[in-house]
Image 1 (cartoon, rainbow, N blue to C red):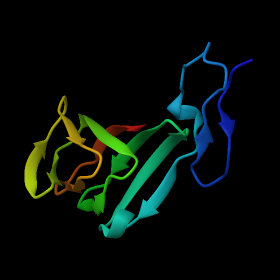
Image 2: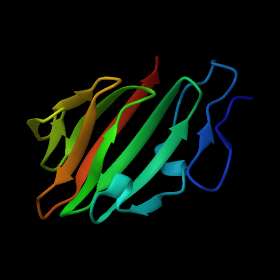
Image 3: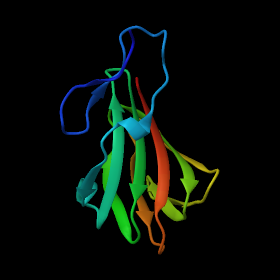
Image 4: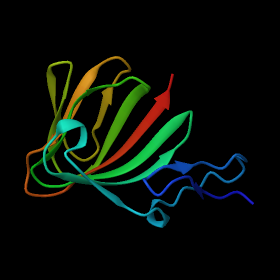
Length: 130
């Protein structure tokens, strides 16, 4: 039977080897709160699915928090905004983030994400290795 298997307690999960059941229930993954991600400020809470081919991350970037500037080395980083407002800076170019917007940081580029608001910024991040 296909199911998500816990790989470690530190937010890493393995996708099923059998691809017949690709349903991922982020609610079944224990949330992990991370302070100052990549040298950023404040905290974020994540539920992550990790595989050698891609990462799927349900992220809540808490008010007045940020993910610090970092290089995208494994693949394109696609960040779909579910709720909240903020901004991303990719290779020096600032982009406003709001629900329904996807910020894409290509492999090899540098970016950061900033929640400069008083509400959570909720993001679904997809990174496909290439």
